[in-house]
Length: 243
Image (cartoon, rainbow, N blue to C red; front, side):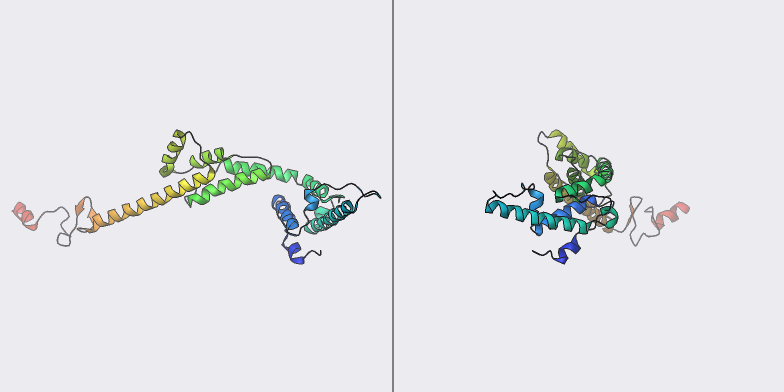
């Protein structure tokens, strides 16, 4: 089967800082092309005169997939990098050789992600997106062989949310059962909705109190009639005191 040029053009070119995404996209496309057999199964034993027809067919299928995989990988690696990596006999060995060249970048990426997870900053935006962002960082660390369970991510999220969400911290601390990330996102979303509703109701209540008899200033209501008499004294009273 020929490899469609559209598949090749959609695979990102390997650079110094996109190795992890490059590997993920590459494997995805090889799977869509039905070439990932060479990634999933080891190289079969060399053929001999004693092999059965089934074994020969299996070897030829694997060898064809492996050869095309190597071509795709070479296409997705720029010449400046490819010149420093020895092309191996199998695509798995070839990818491992490329990985070695980027191990330092992987370590730097791991450190950067860990720093972002341990020192997050909530900017007051959508709380669901904030928690999902932390979950995404944890997932990326998992891809780099640093497994992060839900518990520390939930703990970090709860203790970096601002004051209005402190009640969730107390509730979580008091519970014996831990929340999953999905549960935390659902609970935080409900709490965010409730806080917004309370804010709207409070603003409406303040507006109605102020508009019932004119604007409120220094706890005194300024009506149209007494606009120039802020302390509630009548003109007659002022005149009698003056006399």
